[in-house]
Amino acid sequence: MKKEVKDVQPQQRTLPIDMVALPSEGLFYKNRTSVLEVEYMTGMDEDLLSNQNLIEEDQVWKIIYENKVKTVDKVPFEDLLWCDLLAFMIHIRVNTYGETYETKLIDPKTKNEFNHNFDLTNISFSWDKKNDLSMDENGFINFKTSSGKKFKLRVLSSEKKKEIKKTAQQQKSMGMNTSENIEILKNSIVEVEGKTAIDKNAFLEGIEFTGRDSLEIKKFIGEITPRVNLEQEVTSPSGQKFKTMIPINVSFFFPALFI
Image (cartoon, rainbow, N blue to C red; front, side, top):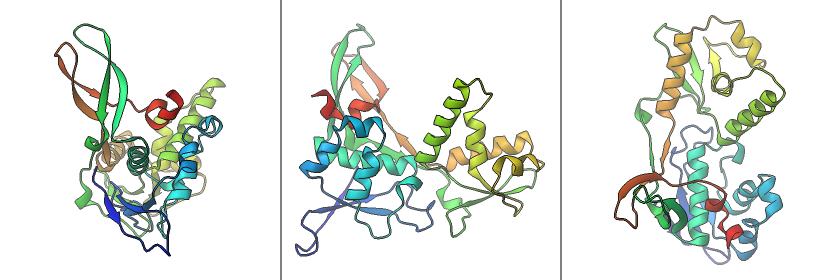
């Protein structure tokens, strides 16, 4: 991942600032912010990355984002797409712990465990159809299905997807019949044929909405959502080359816990 260092006058700020480009280019946000000004981490900031209570409460990255992003018109943390949030988190991790991420893998030939260092600067992002999007001033996407029905859609933020997942898990634990995918679809639809409503469930139930429409919407959103490529080629101790995904887990974001 490339980064550009911006010089800041001493009287304005005491810490250097990095310019971090958002993979989405800001097109899905109302303010269209495409670059974040991220202040360097301090020792006090780094302590947050090992604060067990904040990690368990899932508040670490929100606090770091609010403290370190100095962009005047920054994207609200709750609105960040996963790709943009990950780009920010990788930047913080690289600046704090370095460009490599050591973890354990399994040699496919010998089945033995071995240590491997992933190069985090090789993580890339990809995006399809970004030049073909018809969008409004709020970052919502205009889409018409093959049936001719017109929709206004949004790409859900990382926090919204997390909220839907948590709710679905809670409902399942109570024996309720729920579907995370259906809830994601419902929340992705902002408008149908120019009509909107606060009660999303009642709104969609009152509209002639075909299964084909649903499939086309899900396919379209999947195509236009910026993706993260975490796959890298690894050579094991036995000489076997294989491709594997960089494991995104607690040790990736909070390595200080395992030192």
